[in-house]
Length: 349
Image 1 (cartoon, one colour):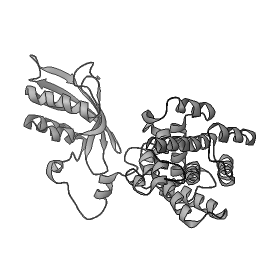
Image 2 (tube, one colour):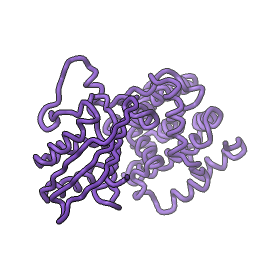
Image 3 (cartoon, rainbow, N blue to C red):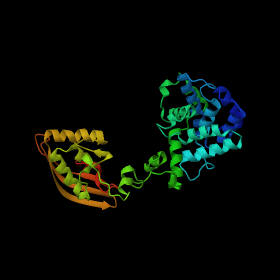
Image 4 (cartoon, rainbow, N blue to C red):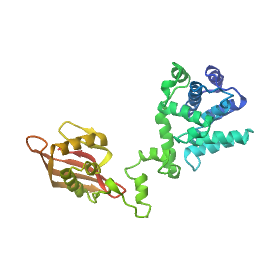
């Protein structure tokens, strides 16, 4: 964490808005957050200001420069111990920032703008419609986290600001802080929020519901329509049965319904595919060649929502000679009720 002695250097070298309120806010963030949060928050302002200049916006005329700095520098205080309440971290941070500004006599109109900028900084498509300071704050934050718009920054600016305010592996450090809060207080990361989506990657498959899981649990009995209305594999054994059926019918969508989004598939020895796009292409080639498959269940081991399945497989039509193999398949049970491939390797054995 930077020392108090170094703070004037940061304000001078980066030409930060230098008022008693901005210095107070910077010192507050320095006191209650980790260094990676402080550095990120200050860099976000520098990048936001650069985006404003690139758009021809003038500080003091087209936007409130002090308010933009306050919105950026305070935007992640919801990740501090002091700011960790019972709401998603963006809203906790907005409330904490509003209280900080109110204690220092900032007028309510400006507090409302800062609140929006902080609460909405992860809300694409909304922040940009809520006013200049809100839009600029999100733009600067997005540049520092994900590199959005970095190509429009002045040459050398990123290098200069990183030399003064090192990244400290920001992206992963920030993600870990969000997940740590969410694991301790799951209600801070409801399924359809950014924290909820991030938390999902750190929990066992199916532990944190997605959109279709929520629909399935709604209790209204809604069913898939159109192409998604195909039969689900209700047991691990049915995955193979449906695969054979969909392959013979040339139903690529049916085949794809038997794989989770990041599944692994080995269509030929030495060819390892990951993800739906690559798998779709390989399966479509099988359909186009007129391939047919015969499966005989060899063995199965099921542990809760995970199953290991092995089949004796005979593939014909894909080449001049039949391909005979022993498959190794890892299946997962989705919360919506169907079994799908996580790994499908006919040649692993």
